[in-house]
Image (cartoon, rainbow, N blue to C red; front, top):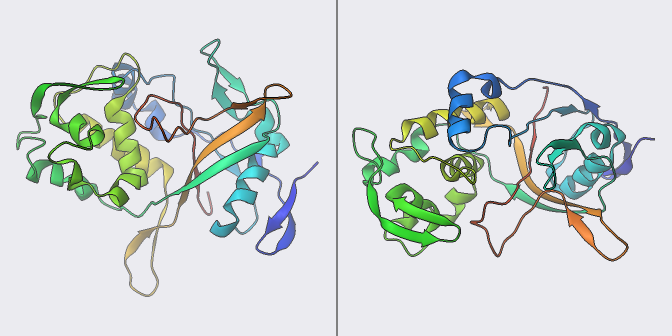
Length: 260
């Protein structure tokens, strides 16, 4: 059975196909080694699904609800079980979703040059250390994580609130904070190199025919999806927790690309 929903003002059949695409960064030896060090190896999963309809960003809620209810998604989309620690298939329809649009406009890693100019990182690439601070659940021992997490730190504002919503920044922050047993880097380059590899693998760019400038064509969403756990309660599949934004919660980000 195909999902029917309103897309672009008309009722549309919306079949999705699981593509089984491989993403280069997940097989890169350097990235694999780093993810293991950062306690993220085996805890990231990237999957690709294809569809043939025109996508309109203002229909994002309908689009993503149809996505999570599609039979091919239900039988192929994987999530990490809190109980077994293993990847399992979604297996049932999502009841409701919460969607946030994630800006995706950056086309250069120069976005992070301010970490050098603001002396968060030394010229030789070493991250500046600081006295230990605690920002639940993180122990912060360097200026980089202070910039990422501590709103009252002196240099927190070198990245604006809009900067912090950028998809490039989100990837960088995920990597810098890592998993539960993360071993932090002393130099910045591994974080930047891995961020760049992931970003290039996930987003698409096009040349504007009028300005001739390169711009990102991908559309990115952060999603919290819920299934029925009982008659009275919902269960979150992918957690978005605004109250504890800095906690090590699961996350689901959906990237929509054309022609992949």
